[in-house]
View 1 (cartoon, rainbow, N blue to C red):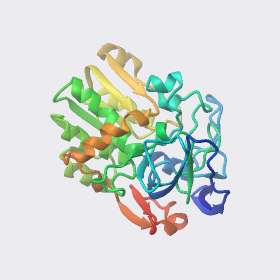
View 2: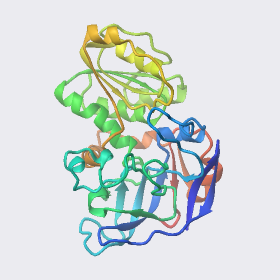
View 3: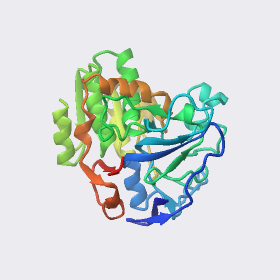
Length: 345
């Protein structure tokens, strides 16, 4: 089979690899039918993520299989798999999780102890598990990981449900439940921030401000009912919830400076570069901050249910629908949210 392989900065190519085989009765093999880029993939393609990160002890030196967001069709399952069957369309979460270890039972599926730390698709950290821009993909614990895609949802619109869409739900939905009508600030550069705008308005935010230098992104945000700005000047006590998804510490600092007393900041940016935060300002205001990879498997069902409600429209974020065979030539280009579709999917 083929897997799309990152080989150098802005360069990917198809490479032949052994096809996955069922090694236990808990496994499944799936074929991606609609796969898309996560916001972090642009950093990988630009070479930022391949620089060694000595403070956490890993590097992502090429070559490696790329991709960790897709809807797939189940091809084969082990004998004890009960939640999915061949032919089903499923959401594949970005991280590997067994569903039964202590961390998984506690909801920390991104920290499953049955696999090496940080085990995921699309990056060689925590082992090599392949990428979701591949003709076939092995799923080690099918019942724990795979989530059936409801029949009334479009696989193209939901190609990001295994990471960015469900992450975006988690960034604001629980907070808006606790703080109805909260004012939400979104500082972003890609799809995560736009999904957050859509979800925040649907769930009752009284105000959403989306900050992004890209005019096309701002136009989409305005379509979701958000106010927009090209740059941010701190708005003292302006927002109850701030979401930063730029990977730039300076932007994160501006976001926290705009929080109301006891405000909440969620950072979904991949911070490959160091920087400083205004800790005294945060202390004086009272800020709760979370900077984390998402334990996405737990949030996929709720995020899919919101998508089914008709109050959100994630399809607006899809910038291009492209043929699977275009991946090597098109993926390195700068697109907001391209979805690559298998003609035989």
